[in-house]
Length: 615
Image (cartoon, rainbow, N blue to C red):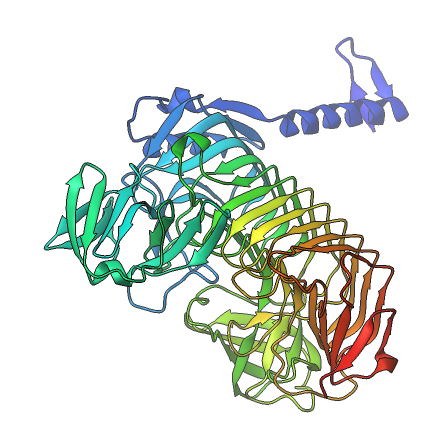
């Protein structure tokens, strides 16, 4: 190679190549240095209380013109209405109702087919109006959202505090964010373009700091009368009302028509210092996305708001993801459902055709409409009653044929034993999971739901007052159709504090929904529960079924004497498990620690606790 200099002399040999390499490196570096785009330059005005939806989209459009960009928001409050916001038809896992109503959603921030974009919220508060998705990341990669807060002008959750209870009268004070009317003697809860048609009520007990299932039926049967700007009196017969003074009734319509944020068919997405003060629908949903990091993400009401509930349902929901899911230094408080749910989806075989073609169907009414398989994916055929694998295969093609069904073509002949009625798990789209340094509190249901065959590590977390099991490892192919079996789980150095008051057990639960037992075969494998601290309400620690390789060692256990005066009498219940180790656990109290066994013998377990058979 030869280059010509200005003076006419030539540059030969390695110097020429070195110069060219330097020029290329400079070009690459310039392409990777992000351009800063100021949203204010495109019409986003903080504290103006004007609709920023169109201006936000102009600013995001400007970011997409560059190889890499940072969108910087002005500090303060930014209001966004559905009018002028981008709209897309979205089918969201566990959050799409089976009806004919529109599935078109409005999004405050939409990053679609985008690359290398950071949204720096500058600690701004984005106030959503109506029913909106806070952000959508669709078919995008290398996306970062940081230093931003989201809330609703009118949350779809209403909160009512009981101020008086008498035999013929109950008085409630509504939170200022809860809009209402009294119509013909009945309380009507409404918002921006909606009203509650069917109420779902969960009661918050501030004395014990717990959430419980409740009901509005006693108040619905009474006559309502507004007595003040935020006060309603219900007159009727209340000999045994299910609430007391100070209780807070939190009420929503259970119809799922939205989510807090959606990350779909994307890669390398990071949420850092993001605060979701209220989410309508299923929280932050990630589906068929590779590598997701949640760092210092909080789902909790703004302290100054005085509200209790921040999540209509789940907080962080992952469906069919792969790569690594990292949840680090996060916090959830005030969820009507689970803080974290990580799973795949079992689709059922409904037809077998020629040329290795299968028709498979979404079975749960709230999960459908999105591709669950792709060409080249590895799949496993699962027996729905045993949850055991029948065979494996690789897909040559995968096509949506309608909103409920896909047509799959295998790259080889159909394996022996595969027939209609079996379910299929996508093994390619299964994630490694790390959940650490986080706090999960004030959840009415479970804490973490985790089903993935890849490595799982849960460490250094606090589970405080989850109403049901603080950790649930399930797997089913007959109800929610959420897959799949775990193979490598470590739960260590966590604290479990007074959980399980709604389920009657504060234990960690490993309970696959396998309805048929195959002797010598097990659904889950290699689960280690080590070095944790349990402060139990009922003395129960662990429920486990169909596990090969279960270790419960080095844990510290105390029981609340007021709730469990007999101490740790029956802390563990095991069914159809083998290779179990329960050693070196420190249990407080004088009552004997007894392990209940079913479908197994003493040969299946190593322990110094007493064994009791339920054969």
